[in-house]
Image 1 (tube, one colour):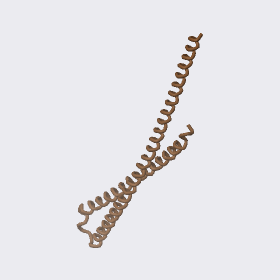
Image 2 (tube, helix red, strand yellow):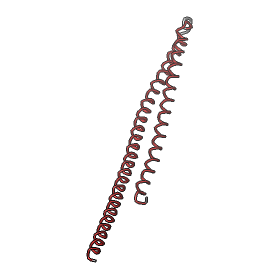
Image 3 (tube, rainbow, N blue to C red):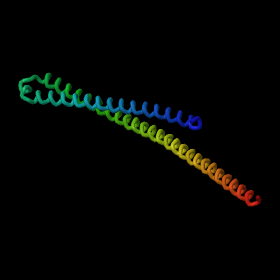
Image 4 (cartoon, rainbow, N blue to C red):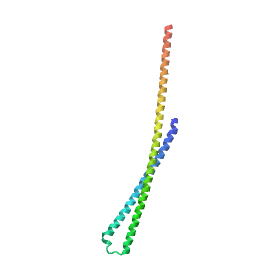
Length: 155
């Protein structure tokens, strides 16, 4: 149907855009999950290190070693805070990707709805044309029948 070709092309393009947005959304989810895993590893490592330190090994250590341990723990905490910042950024990016995916879905659905409506309009027009043709045929048949009857009465 050449009449709907432009709309079908628009649907094809909208489908490709929606698929691309879906891939971006999936990648954003994967990246966020990876970042959460990294944060969990940092926190687990910090907890394990603290547990070992508090477990009794810190009794006979020098002040310099204790100071080193606290500096190391501060760096781990700082790294965990930075990772939380990264996660917050990735969550915003995921939300934006989700919004773009929804917009692409709505656009595609809109095109499909327009195409469906145009097909319905065309079907209604076709039915009207068929009805007119049927009505004309019936009128012509009736006219011919009356004309034939009128001729027979004259004879």
